[in-house]
Amino acid sequence: MQTETQQETQSFIDRIGIPRPLLWGFVGLLLFMIGDGVEAGYLAPYLESQGQSSTHVALLFTIYGVAVSISSWLSGPLSDMWGPKKVMWIGLWIWGVFEVLFLVLGLQPNNYSMMMLAYTARGLGYPLFAYGFLVWIAAATPARQLGSAAGWFWFAFSGGLPTLGSLFASFAIPRIGEMGTFWSSLGLVMAGGLVALLCTREPRGTQRLSAPDVTFKQAMFGSISIIWREPKTLIAGLVRTINTSSEYAFLVIMPGVFTKIVGFSLEQWLQLLSIVFLSNIIFNLLSGLLSDRFGPRAVVAVGGGLGAAICVPLFYYVPVAMPHNFPIAAAMGVLYGASLAAFVPLSGLMPQVCPKEKAAALSILGLGAGASTWVGPAIVTWFEAWRGVEGVIWIFSGLYVLAALMTVFIKVSPEARAYTRQVEANSQTDREAAMHAVGNQ
Image (cartoon, rainbow, N blue to C red; front, side):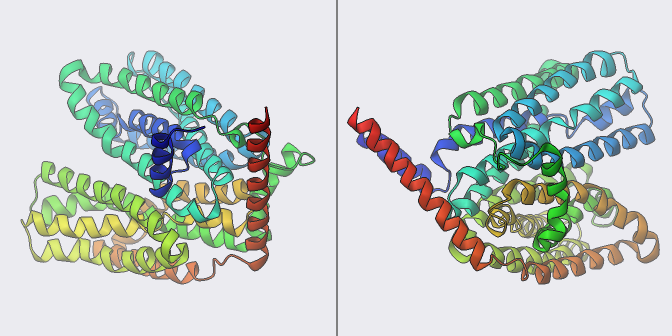
């Protein structure tokens, strides 16, 4: 028998949208992503201070991004075959082992070849851990709670990378030095991984999610073939790519806009960027909760697509029209960060669209998330010289309108709803039978 206090605690956790059996997984994910984000704000300038050219640094990050994209996609089919928890263990140890190699054989002796090898391999680690947990959430969470659970996932994910990770680094570097801070990130990642994996006992995470007769080859092919078997997953993947593509583009073009045109110092620009990320973190959670109330498609299409289509031009034109006005720029940054967060319910919608292939559907979203890291800068490369920064701004605004229109077609079919209800009813029956058996012992 649970005590009254335990029941109240459980009710509170459920009310705020966190699946109670996965609570420690969310805590561990936050710690893991803080560790992963420690280096985000200072690895590039550190490498350049050690004599590496900006071209070498850019290439290192580009190849790392490719590894992240591949691993983001692999997290789905691997979780289907081996169970999400095993995939998370693999991601944790990949991160830990190759981080040690990166620091000892690459960073400390300033060996670029070893940096490239170890850092690229390490890039396979965090998506397996993080997106493996997202598959676990999809497998173990009732459909009515998936939106808010996805919101909490992205709250923990982006709260760590880059927000709290960079904040931790800003305090750690003056006290233990740059190399000491790199090593501390390893400690945070391992601590977060162990908390998530040792303290989370929910049984679905340890189980193979695909049918027993599905082979490894079929699972891998299925995670790609789903885009033409279930075209809604392709639409969702494209929407997810559009979602954060402007964010990565703005990291390229906006520092110059705000320091050279708006008149901010570099410190003010970094503070503004922190405000954007903080807004994004808060609204990641709120958009998930709102999707449970108003439906995920409405939140994504209106708050995300149409909202970003309006907020992207505002984030550029209003500060340019009112230079040296930090509060106004910050307000526009809050709106922009909130609009990007409104796409979060996609992670809760796709398992409902494809309830029989949740991991494969989420792997397409992971692929879209990875693609946005290079699509955004590519749009800048292709179009800035042709139409300038303003042209890039309006291209992204148009893409967000397109994303809103595409979201309208991501509907949950009656067959998918019926299947989900049947699975949840069976799960509830199994739980009640297990509790009855325990009570009779």
